[in-house]
Length: 618
Image (cartoon, rainbow, N blue to C red; front, side, top):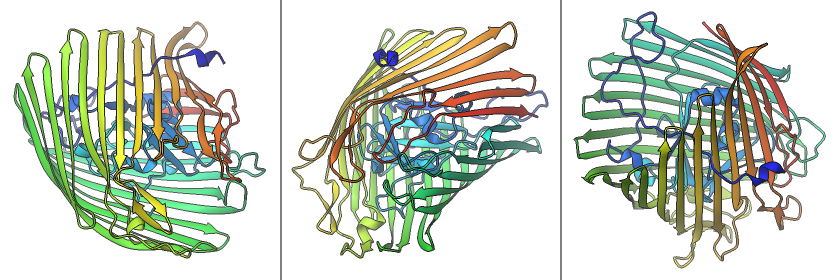
């Protein structure tokens, strides 16, 4: 295809927001609405070292103009990210970042980790997360244990649910079995309090999860998000509560269309008290996360439950040439499940984790910054684990050159520690944490206000890998390791009426023994093109064009279980947006070329979908 000649890179613009004090409002403010904003800074950073954290941001505007329905629609167009999903919308999905495992990606909501401890490997299922009540997505590429904590060996994804200050209703549909509805409403009281509530629902039913299957599998999703904020002088009190329920129809396997239904509920609530001064910030967060999952296979019920509660404190202060921060977090995780039927498995257990962390930022001399991050985690099962990061960055004219070194880890899951099954498996309470070391070098350049580019190379080694052998999870030998290395490139070109973002990623990801890891293509590339048009007949409208090439890779055959090579895919999404008075009309086409492909083998992916929508502000 013509698009396969494209080899450059995509750059989703990066910015960091530092709230020094309550700011003047920068949105439409005809009714003297107070400026109440909820800003989430990066954990364990301060002003002079936050730039050393690689951060891609997908804004609300970008989400809406792309026509995205779920998280996968957005994340698949980012460099260094590979996603596999066991069928179309609503099916179980895993994300690999920089070639590491899907359990090496930490997932957060408003900066708080939400990984599900009732799963066997602590994975987050991206297939059940839909986009309606999400305000912003932040992707932290590369190791982030020193900033975010355990499991962020490959990177982290932060979902922001706060800050939507416009009132609107949004509806889109293909037919009665495929629609999307969202309502967002804000309430202001006493010139200092903000109440925000969102409600969204999605129904999607297209094709069988099984490749070339005969039935249709579907998903229904409901999400509610409540946000509150109050300012008293320089004190800010906030609450954010997010509730999501996803009910999906699954196939029993890649070769068996026997139906079963999964009901996946998640709740997270967070209370924050922040004290903000001109050059310092104190942040206290009390939180609770809950998962409640149930799977019904023709009357055989499997139950999964997970809870996490914690308290976190984060402080940062900065001066002209120096900044620092420190903090602590206590977290209690528990998980249990009962898997019935022909395969019986269960687990029940918990652990506590106490962390202390700190950071320094130095402007050593003209345009040279040194960033240091460190974190100690004391876990009552795995003991003391340390993570740290050092980064040196030099600005030479319009070029930025940087080098960094990271150490991180992943704790074993509740199932790996305490689980059992009817084939003789029993948990291993002596498991140690997996350990990682990553080295990175990067070059960035802002040639002008209209053109920027970056090149980033990395190499990661993971030791003490937890693997399943002889009915038991064990740590691999100290002499063996997983290795990932690669080069990511990004370009952004801006004009008055258009923007072009391009990306490419070259990856080498090897198992122990040097054979390539499954489902990690050596090469991915693509672009996003946004163009504003002025037509004589219909007036102004916007076009958003996304393209992604997912290269050849190895996978496991769904029936023979042998290792096979999977062909590459080229996916195109197209969205047209038209604003008229208080209305915004949208035509969205996903998988424009209707490419038939499997990822993983045996499971269908989304066919061509056309949705027509309208958004009305009020």
